[in-house]
Length: 104
Image (cartoon, rainbow, N blue to C red; front, side, top):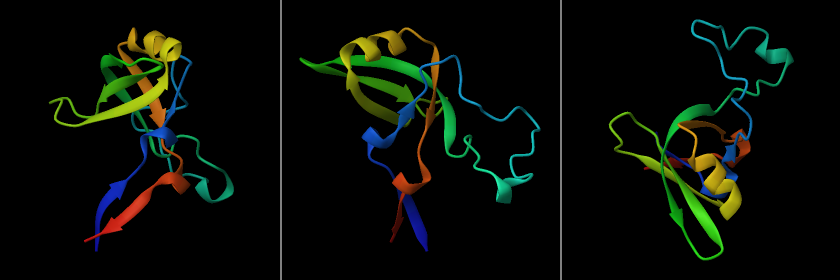
C-alpha cells in the first residue's frame, strides 16, 4: 500500500569530498549487512543542474533523472552552494530515519 516516499530537503546530506563510498558496478551491497551499517544505503550521484541564489542562502538544484523531469533543491550556505555548483555531479545521502513512507 506504499504510494510515495517523501523527504524534507534539509535532511539530505551532500558529500563535500570527491565521492561517497558508493557501490561499484556488480558489487554485492547485501553481503554481511546484518553485522554492519552500510553507509551507501539511500545514496545517489546526481547531476548538478544550476544554482538559485537568494539573499542569505542559495539553493543547489540537482537533476534526479537523465531526462531532467525531477529535481531536488537543497538550501545551503551561499559559499558551499557556489562551490558545489561548479561540480558536474555530487553524491547525496538520505538517512533512513528521515524517509517518510506515505500511503494512499
